[in-house]
Image (cartoon, rainbow, N blue to C red; front, side):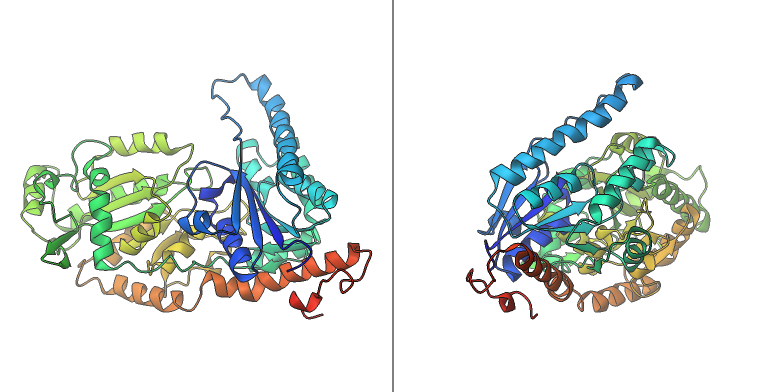
Length: 493
């Protein structure tokens, strides 16, 4: 299709940690039959569907090195200027030399500088359409570390707005962001809600058992001293995990298993992980108070009763925290210092194939994303919903575009409120936790009706097609028909 039958997806970041842009590349290849060049940083491994698709070609740029913490303050402004300059020329080299000329560049924003500038220049030089996929605003993320009044933030915002307006088309993630772009930026954007692709789905019992067998080593190693999950795991049989057991060819969930709470985080300042730690501590203390336990209660007796299969009104909670980021080590140190009886934490990084299986095996998801702009939505919640996992999420301005209270999740504004929700949802777990079951059923019903391919076909494909067609017609000397190009193949004009 088109002059070249190619598209280029640009991510100035780790492609493996940019799921929306992976799905964009897949849809361009599958649903528009285009050859797709992806220009991004390496790091985490993308999903196998990306790596195995014959029409998707990944071009990996060299990552900018991490700035040392002990660097003198006087050098930081120099690096703030030097970093985007080097990235700009690297991007131009890849976009103008390393790849074939595409019909359209589709770029992730943020980061905005130098990405939008470089892609605009490349699109002009290669006579290609230029589309921005607005995930958030780059200047609001920069302001988290430099402050809103910083001159760097003001310059960044000007560049982001100026080059964003030069795009031939725009996609964005929420109606709130669409309104902001239209009213204050002069940019008309099409809302493309994040939806889970087909490989995010509820996990079968057999898949759960196989996953927990693979994760057994990670689950066995606590961040601190022995806890309520690692205790007794040494005596497990080869065909059982802390959650499941195998009888012949049948898999069974253990009745006194811990409840699994998953939270995916980038360990950055826009997610206050301290809220979750405080809520876990409150859950632990409040359950002890409800059961009339005091500090003199022997923890060894409790752990032995658990090992013997005893069930309690409130279960043990295992928080599995996935993701990579700068604040991870400091929070792991805080977790080590906690003295928790019924709560345990594990941090891990999962493959793109195992992550959906974990979401489908968990009992609850927790999202701490608050958004630097207040206008984007956490894709991690979308993934959880695709796996039938209900969510407790931090409340902010537009989160209700995604989380429907009492249908697929709950919203909280403080650690105490989250602790109350944990107590309510897990009382009587696993058989008599009726509120949790209601949310899970609602999540499954709502999740079945929305998938990425359908959303993309309805909203993104017409916009991309229109941009390619009209950009081509505006810049071609001959008519499309003289060039052997049929606009109707792209878009009904």
